[in-house]
Length: 466
Ligand SMILES: Cc1cc2nc3c(=O)[nH]c(=O)nc-3n(C[C@H](O)[C@H](O)[C@H](O)COP(=O)(O)OP(=O)(O)OC[C@H]3O[C@@H](n4cnc5c(N)ncnc54)[C@H](O)[C@@H]3O)c2cc1C
Picture 1 (cartoon, rainbow, N blue to C red):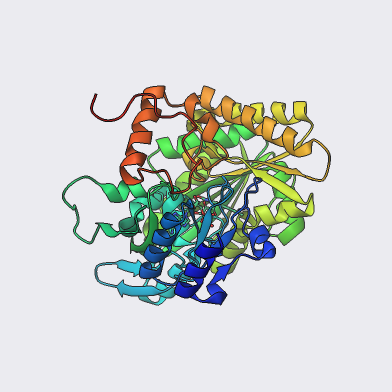
Picture 2 (cartoon, protein in one colour):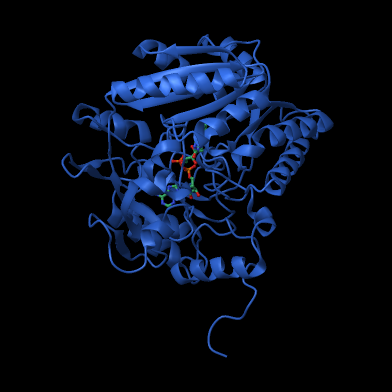
């Protein structure tokens, strides 16, 4: 290990190679629950440096884990013992913005919101807007195929990535995808998006930029039951109006948000829906009317339309501060992530409450209702003996309920460590084997983010000629 530190220091300098126990502690976890341990943490600033770092790690038999801002919730960036952690936050340059073609080449360490702010004066933005967008990086978004409130109409990250530069397991650099509308050959760019650092390190990203909308309005609809709110969601989508965003928060969540930011959410409603309609003024007016009608028909007790920018911003601040708000209730939280068919939202949420009651834990719900992406959120104190184990066991049951309702393991946070062992609940051994073979095609020796995404023993057949 000392030799690896020397070689890395010769490449990057003292300041960008850390092996102090404090650094090891700081970088041992992401925003999820699990902790790991990397003896060495490095901060490259260019693609060439990443390639050289990968070669040094290879020469010393060290596994490699890529890390963006560490806001991931599935343990994807948590280093397995003995790994070299490659932090990409210093690769945060926006290299080129093509205003006409509406694309940009950016470093993987660019913070999501910084990109939209840098392109705002050209009337453009990067559409995927995870609630963590003021901290998470574009590289992390690519690796997790991040979603966000406004991905309902615009699609998740994969729809906004045209190409990536990737440093592979042997330290080669390749470009996958590109500016051509339909690059020939297999869509390897699509394979990289959502691969959670297991197929290579993303060192540059060609993003698609989206035009800012001429008009925007936000609706806040309150309901006496979660069922009424969930029915409204299904009917809105069935009516063919896909709002830019359609979020749900239940009563405990609204109370927590109001205590935190006073955004104007009702604290007596069982559930609220927050919808954004964007587009041409004539179109937004028609959408507001249609959404309001559907909500009222389904029992909405109030519909508030915020049309000026400050009122809209305040309502969205409430939604995006939800995770900060719950920090008032307890020092720790666990945010689950599953997807269910929209028609099963109410039923699955009520089962999550039954589970929470049985495990005696505090549950709130805040989620991307338009695409059925549930986020049961448990607020707890990890210092309480046995509490973390209870939270994890309850979360597993919640995932099982979602899968039984026709849903799946993750809508946007990824699999990481957290859900790795649940993969066999949605994939057959043959499916897992096919995925393991794909991974092996990129990383024969399994050095990239080992232990993540696929469960142990995913390869079920012998590989290669008989
Ligand atoms: C408060 C809060 C709200 C959130 N809201 C959302 C949300 O609305 N939608 C959503 O999708 N997620 C959300 N997340 C989860 C998280 O922010 C996203 O998964 C985000 O995309 C992670 O980005 P990051 O830079 O922090 O990546 P990290 O956490 O550092 O890494 C995540 C994964 O990506 C890999 N990785 C990172 N960079 C690279 C790279 N350059 N090359 C290859 N692999 C790489 C890592 O190995 C790891 O597997 C939220 C998290 C928090 C804490």
